[in-house]
Image (tube, rainbow, N blue to C red; front, side, top):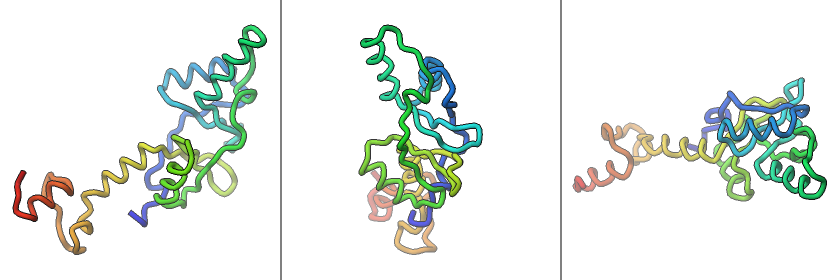
Length: 162
């Protein structure tokens, strides 16, 4: 697990929004794709911000004060976005997810260009996939039992089948 990087487990095909997108179209995009937020990317491919469900709730608040609000994604998006580099370790991602409230992190290269995103679920899936790593059995040449996970393999190794 220590040698896994963000690039190894990130999603490369990311639903993005443009800063110039109408805010209601942005809300519809989040709802349509059943996602909690989306990176906002400029024409140059660089990350400009992030629009979350929480940001979208600001539309309702603006409506309560001013009638039916209008605006663009750039009017409601979060500008100060926590990102992670593709070279970041799995542990770097876990640290950010544990220490912050983020559910997803945009992955950006050295130039600020969006190259993917990593979610808490991606990290959990990577951890689950690692569970069947033969090195977990104590020797590098040990082989996992066919069709079993670590818990089942440990019970079998101890002589208990169930």
